[in-house]
Image (cartoon, rainbow, N blue to C red; front, side, top):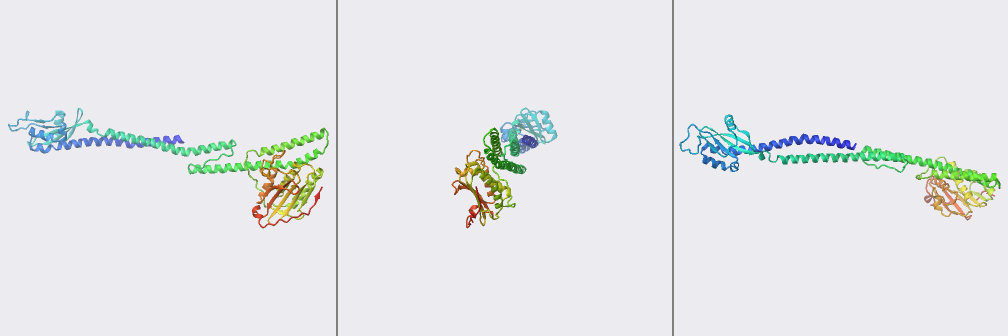
Length: 470
């Protein structure tokens, strides 16, 4: 497109320059010629009054010398012989008077005399203007003015050079402007094509600058919007794959604990090895699904709320059986009455399994843990406490995909909890529990306000009644 615009501009400008410059050059040439001969006619007309008075050669010489052309030796006067001429006319040669250098031929002089009007004849080195003029004797004298070639073409070459330079400048300028416009149009199109190719090669961060003509700007906006949608869709798919894979860790934990109680023997060793390999594969799936993708959150349905007490009791029934096998003391409080929260039931169950799974996975057997639910006016707080060794870096544990550096940690469980809390306007914090280990505090806002807003004037109602297992 760029070279096509340049060629079109070059052709159009060249035609315009030829259409105007050539006629203008011819006009300049004709004007110079007319100017030279008009000046010669004026020079010849100055001799007319002298010829009307006298044909005396001496007086004619003085009259010719007084003119510019005569002073430069470019004027001559031809007076023909008269039938009756005074006897004392000593300047007459055969009855005729010649003043100045004659350049025109006799035939040219005779023709001009016969026509009775000015004529131009070609002579060596230029042109001769022949101007017939009547004298006192009734004859017709010819005033000859020589016009050299340099006067006829005076200024023509300069004018043509100027026209050529101007025409060339117009052509170069039009080509440069066309190239600039072509670049302005082609460059955004090339960037758009390159970005589309990069996006097709998997470079999801590729974006197109929104510049150029309006149509290309609109195309760039549409491309960037499409790229953002693609990135978001891929991120949501990866998040879903990672979250679903992480949910497999709960039954894997049960399998690992059951395999540990099988005792010794080849079958028991093979079972434990298979469970460990399966758990490693699940961890690898989680890490692979989360590689090189932006942090996006899957939207949670706040409208599909649930009874937190019911969900927590159900999940605690499952984990209490495992705790009994490992000799762990379990305390559950605050679930004696319904507690509605704006979180979907599967999401709350996944978050609770993630926290309790971390307790079984990262604390020794026999370590006690507790789950407390505090129901307030504008928020519900779920506390999961244990008596384990604690978390060395709570901030790192909350960053998705990093974990806290423990073996077997994908760093995804607490992030699932965080996203559930943030979907309601709440948050997750990690601290030290009264049992001596880690306390995970999940703030679930009921009115959409964040914890900083909800705390002001908020009183948490503590309920310690509940069952103790183990």
